[in-house]
Image 1 (cartoon, rainbow, N blue to C red):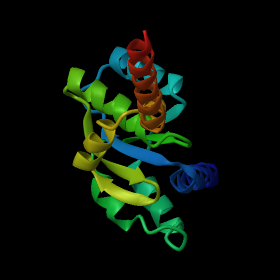
Image 2 (cartoon, one colour):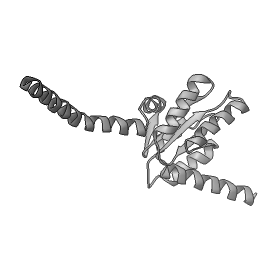
Image 3 (spheres, rainbow, N blue to C red):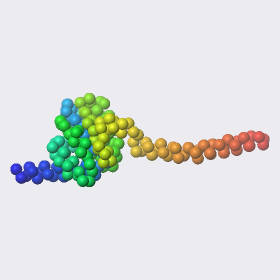
Image 4 (cartoon, rainbow, N blue to C red):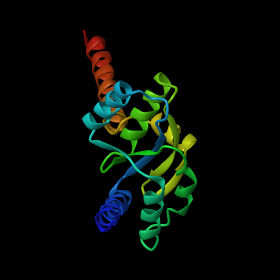
Amino acid sequence: MGVQREAKAQVVQEVAERLTGSAAAVVTDYRGLNVAEVTELRKRLREAGVEYRVVKNTLCRLAVDRIKEQVDLEPLKAYLTGPTAIAFSKDDPVAPAKILNDFARTYKALELKGGVVEGRVVSAQDVVNLASLPSREGLLAMLLSVLQAPIRNFAYAVKQVAEQKGGAGE
């Protein structure tokens, strides 16, 4: 019995570390997905650097209690009902939301319950809204375009003036 208790304590510690060390953690209900679908989902998440883990609700609640002094994730307990799996992303808060939301649109059995983003508990609708944001690369491309626009417009105006002056002298 002591070995089981130690294994459970280890799981609680790992979940607590992931909840505090992740940019995002999305809680899902995977009930109704078959093995092939879960395997496909895990593959997509793994390619994006996201860990997808089935967690017992009781152990996850204990992990939330363990980190209570560091981060208050008490509202997360409301999402810990039924079969629960959590997608943890260390770096990109949008990646798990985007992948899980796209997968849930294709496979209706996957249900987004809620999650944690940057240390704040969010609802399922917030996860869907987060998924609709462009990726980090897309946001950087938009920013670069905005920064280049004034220079591009200035260069275009100078070119037009030079062409008018050059055309009038002939």
